[in-house]
Length: 349
Image (cartoon, rainbow, N blue to C red; front, side, top):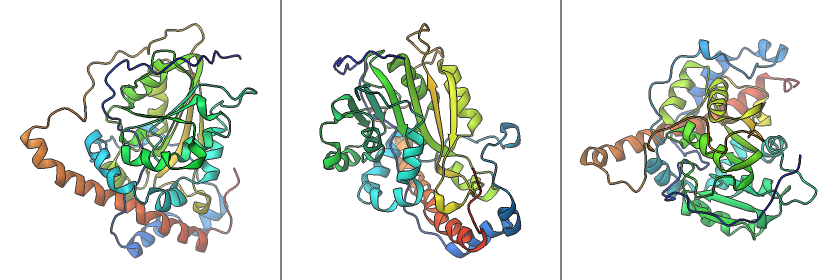
């Protein structure tokens, strides 16, 4: 299928306030030993050796989510990355979002073309790790990295591999691109911070040309009750059924889902994964240019004035959210240690 790849300029269709996109996991303080014991209790060694963990989960079997995570907000995410950007590439990617996981996910995104000129927007691109993977398929002059965090983007701009890429500070739920601007949309580790994930996916649909593809890589919710408490408290960990529902409501078809996870986990998924699922959908060639779902005014704007109550609650909520995220800083070490000790080999795909 051929795609038009005109170099139309960015169009500020709406005010590019701030995006609740952006990759990232906080550094927290916790105790590893109790976590390891919980992991071991949840995964019998014999069962882990004999069968692979089924990645998909039934929506009917999952308890309903009670509200948004404490860091699933634009201001909270902005300040979260103000500090995490300092060490993000050092402490986050090695344990949650590896090169192998990225390459597997982007192979699903339909980025390859002989001319390497598919206009691509990488939303919530942060420090540019996912954008580097996009550049394996697309020349930099056709790639735009968008993020709400200038601190994250400063790290990306300093990377020699990203020279020639366009950088835009903006909001994933209110993209500053014209309707039908891009051939491809990618977003990795960003949806978990969107207050309105349906709105973000609707924007992905809108900015694509007919026949364009949108690929989102994000978390999956824990099935273990203890880990589910912490992931729900921290941010958005969707179920596969929710990803599919949002894509279908926006108007995408030919929806494909793939599963990823750190190799060192050897298939353990019940505690949730910060990067665990890749979903790709296609915008119909003869369908509506605008998303099918009709949404009201955007619920959050980082530049909107805060009420006195919001100001009083902001710091306590942010700190508690940071502590919740700390669980997912300690958890990888526990899972990897358990897998190394009790799982003889990774389950076969």
